[in-house]
Length: 104
Image (tube, rainbow, N blue to C red; front, top):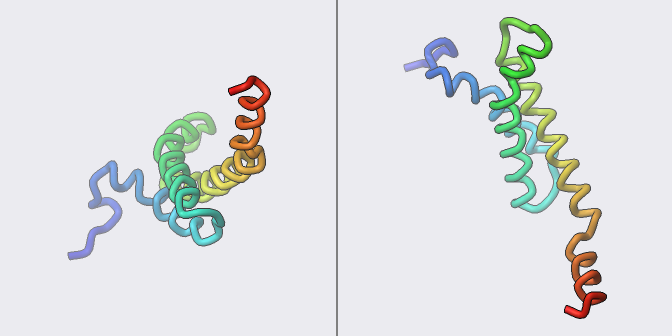
């Protein structure tokens, strides 16, 4: 049995483009497995929750799947960049230095 996009449950049809785009973008995301899973989740959830809002902001009608796909793809890039920025802060070392100065 073949399921066409208009035969899918509405929530699946809404989530699928962003999830697929995030899976595709995962190919180009470097980092630990945890970072990759986090970037994927960021892309998929960003796509799911932002699509309807952006459709309203830009006054766009039709093709929410295309917008969902783009958000999923670019959310991955943003999530990956955020993880990179967090790593570059070297928070563990900074917190340890701060605690040492405080005598802890």
